[in-house]
Image 1 (spheres, rainbow over the protein chains, first blue to last red):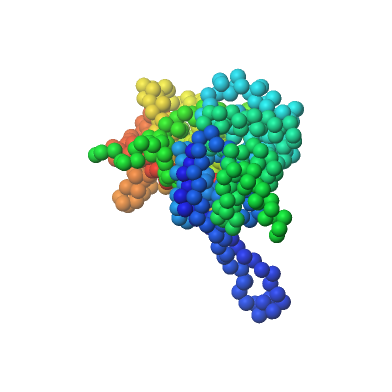
Image 2 (spheres, chains in turn orange, blue):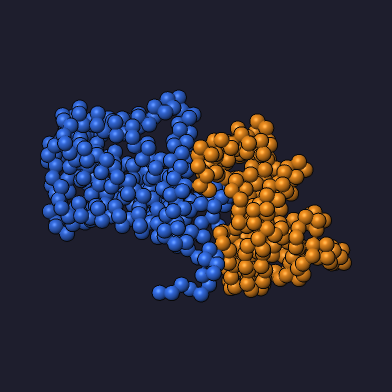
Length: 242
Length: 280
């Protein structure tokens, strides 16, 4: 579980407008400057053990920033996130673990990195390869993988040990139907062992019928939170209106 | 001291807080198989596409020794006040090369394995430590070449040779310290990967790889700088153990042991404090 209190997160990015002929002629300094994006503005959220939490919101509403802040990858401006162990984030097009080596080898390296004994990994490897389900490609370097294949491998690695909190940011969107089903089974197991899953998806109907609770983010603040059907309905009505 | 009030949920931590040292070390220890298996695989992978393959692990140190032998033994015919100068030189060059390689590896390691850092959760110090392990494994064939060269240059096995594991252990500890520190610096300051070449070229001379400082430097302050240099200490210790007639001063031993403990501790603490910053 996680307790988030009055969380504010902002990040700085370069603002690089097109330079006109006059700036070039007068050789004025580049108009490039920092812009601060205040992406999460005061979120309070308590996630429970065994809870499947869905997060909806328009592009740019702060969903991904909230998840990144929960893993500690983005510094927090103010407020706090308290967790038992660092949440695991599964993002779309996420980093390839070790692009040059095979998928099978990456599974093994990932397992050893989280502290699973080598003997146990060797025993489980065939089973894990079957779970990834990408056939012979498992022995090819992951730099040659499609985004869907990579997502399957990453999901498998991320759930090698049951995480306390798993954050899924659209990571299943690129998988095919059969993999999505298997991934949901695995998520079910995580929830069953008192884990928490936070799912960000634009497939909101799916969230509405799978999740225990759904939160709706608008401009970095939670607009509504609670019963999945109700929140998703309100969100869809709002999207249709604007 | 009494327990803090919120000890009801002892495992709850504020995100972004550095883990405790004992927890960190325990987490590292539980990943020890990674630190052995992964660098071993990397080593095998390195020469996979060359014609001579794994033989390179022997050929590299052998060629290094050969080149130094030709230049200093045959062409220049110097002894620089050391009875077995070729042996002296080979020990210096081979040991020094390991540390240079490790530092060069370490300075890029957090960048190179950013994918792994973002994908799975593990104490990040595992990566530079693995880099040290890889180079230490690669040193095993070099060690065979080293002993072969010593025998060829007239050294005979002595009781002191039994101290070989101690030399390797002290060297390993110093290397772990360097690797952690350079990996941390390399992550914060990208320019480190350029600077490191120059740092280690300077260190090459400041560690007495090619010469015995006592014979060439009369300024006592400058000589003291050699004594506090951990790499000079490793080289001096190795030469004392493996060569017949080398002396080793007490201050050198003192500083060497000190660094072998202090450098890894400093490195681990640096990592602890930056743990959440890696992978951004």
